[in-house]
Length: 112
Image (cartoon, rainbow, N blue to C red; front, side):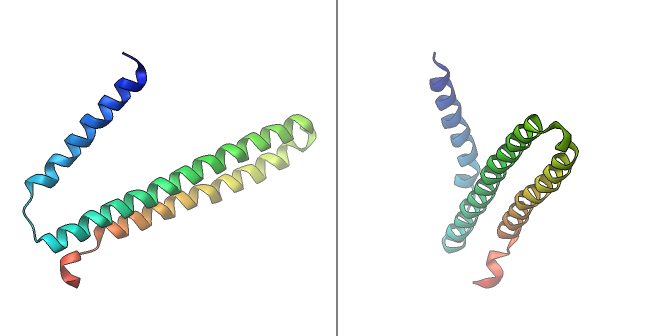
């Protein structure tokens, strides 16, 4: 089997496995829809944050390597700025994680 087919089968299996607890619960339908929506929004927030952080870190590291290879004498300064930039990029991902946790931990029953 090709690797893409194996990956697709594994994703379908994991999706069905994650769906099974949702079908076993009995809750108020209006609150359940809001909770499902919060899970989707939370997952979207953290996914976009991680994707943006990964691309930004990859671009920063590749630019720093290119800059150091062009001017090795400035390597120490470029490295310091790179580490500071990576810290700022990583805080974006941490903020996205915190927003996702806040979205998922809201007590939906208290507001209806």
